[in-house]
Amino acid sequence: MGKWETGATGQQAYTELVSMGLQELYVDPVRLLEKDPEYFRWLVGIIHGVTV
Image (cartoon, rainbow, N blue to C red):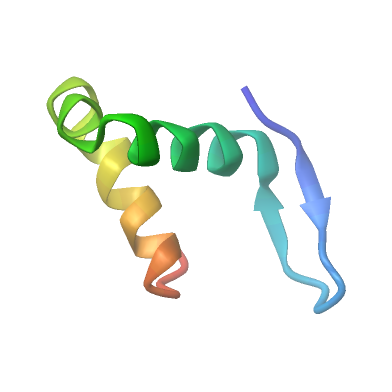
């Protein structure tokens, strides 16, 4: 599903989930929103700098 990566700032993130989700947002954001609204909101939150 994903893997923990520690960045230069020491923050951890699910890199696979983020990279694949960003690709989905770029290709067809409406489809992603309809398919998985929770994942969509999580990705948009990351883009806006909101951590969960």
